Length: 503
Image (cartoon, rainbow, N blue to C red):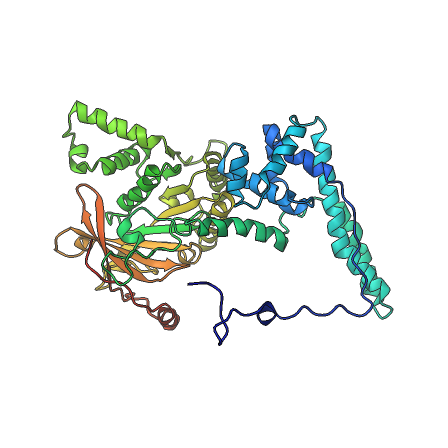
């Protein structure tokens, strides 16, 4: 099955059918100016990135759009990705990270020619930026000015305005750091497309019965959570106290540990020690009651500590500085968010968990919450990690309804908790509200930007040992939040969903 759309005759559409022919050049149009640039500056900077650790800071200062030498932009993109992943330089790594787009041997040749960074590296860096500015000016305001100047019917005020823009562009050379060209976007997106093609399009949360449809269902083995815990995305996990959200989050963290992926854990509600103990007990499938009441031997304690040490190799904990220093009048959200960002950048985790995220916020007005959540999504995108924020539900909202399962409206805080993240997952234990056996837990997918929603999955649950197994699709009628917009969305996402037996 291919992606390409086909014509009625069944043949692939020709290029001219898909995009149309480019418009003919206007009569008398002038060829664009060509400005020479010195590629030696690019060669020096590329080699220095590999040979001198101090030069790595330049990877954050400029984009691949500043490189015009053949193959240099692809090499720069690969080096930026390696810095993000904290990978050491190696030709094979350059080739793998770039998806084969970068010429690793070309970079290796530059390194052999220049095994040491020159003392005047800053000069080459400035000249590289200046070359990029000159070329950008020629392609932009200079070309527009000359075209208007050649046109005898052009408005004189517009011609003067274009002329005034030229020195402004030249004065601010190197400052267009966030201006992106489509060529650079294509290069970076190409890396992600290669990752998907290599089988990394979906990233599991670590609970098999949630990640995939049930084995005997109509969509056996298909991914239910798309893209799941993918880099640059954000998930909100919510539930009442005792609903199992912390235990479910622990299962997701342990999946990363077992795949040897680094995790940064802001265990602000439970504390680092209790959270690490929970992870180890969940991994060993030990009784939480026995641990909490001291019903274990010295030998079992050593085994638990060894498991905590194993997990601790991949899970990094940090505490948020609560309260105010003596000389501070007020602590603002930005200070705590800056603190979080520094830790994410230092650890470079595949997953960052904030439990509970509200502890990081001292300003909780709707606008403040929205800005904080957008800032966290920006961190996920900038650091290429998955951000998972744990938030509580409004108990009173659930108690007033016959169906006590989570809804989008029951999430505490502003509407940004639903609008900003890519995925919102609510956990529910039916036994909290009904006198029934406490052996089931439900996961309600309240939002999924790239997949089906709302959907509900019921799993087998053992509260004593914290195990979550099985998985079966169940009905979810969105209690208390059906409106005109919801109806349209529900119809657009309606499809056949497997409801087979639990594996």
